[in-house]
Length: 123
Image 1 (cartoon, rainbow, N blue to C red):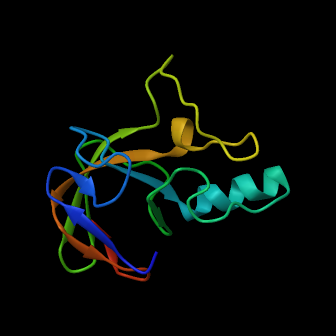
Image 2: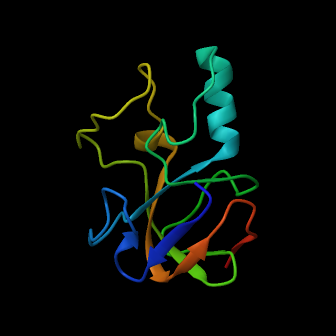
Image 3: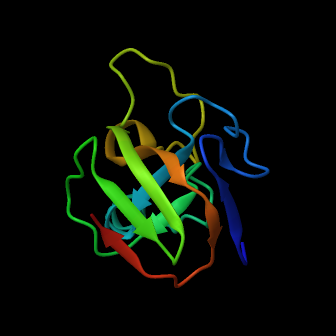
């Protein structure tokens, strides 16, 4: 997308998770997607893994409570990694889904607009 509007406490405008209490935003590391593409033998189009954000250069492990500053305005709080054991996840792309094991879920602490290529800083 050319841009996404993040709303404090609600998520990304127009997203199916908008308004949820937690897990408002889903994040995958670009490195994890590339690794899965090699294993799968095919590419994953943007959004095909149900991710809202793809960010390159983040550490392998993010810790709940850490904050990501995205662009000039947006601050996202890391809520959890993956899904809870036994929690269903019905979305996949050609049999692949990364959010349950490698994905992160975040909540919007400060809203604003994000565009591809915006700087990201781990606070």
